[in-house]
Image (cartoon, rainbow, N blue to C red; front, side):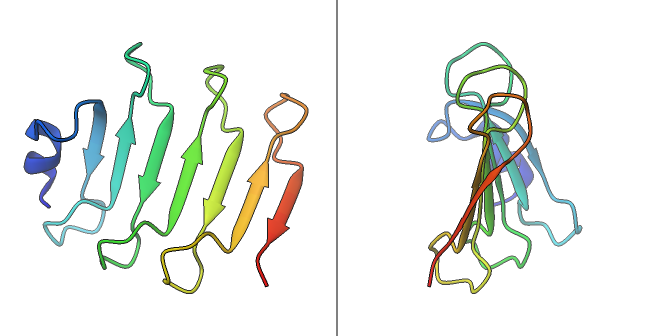
Length: 99
């Protein structure tokens, strides 16, 4: 999907930003506003251009700080490392890895 398609697609209702950071014509980063307040609360990144998200960042409590980060290191579409801000202080302090 191109940046223009992502920004104008009616299938993606809450896109705040879509970027092609490596200039290959495909979207590498999409920021979503899931609650309609105009602020991104979910960011999905595809760094290798395979169309599968490599990482996801969430602001679940809408305080402007990431409180969940998940990374797919092996490209299988599943989160391999997840980090959570359990204290609400903006620091990702709980890390889980899949075996």
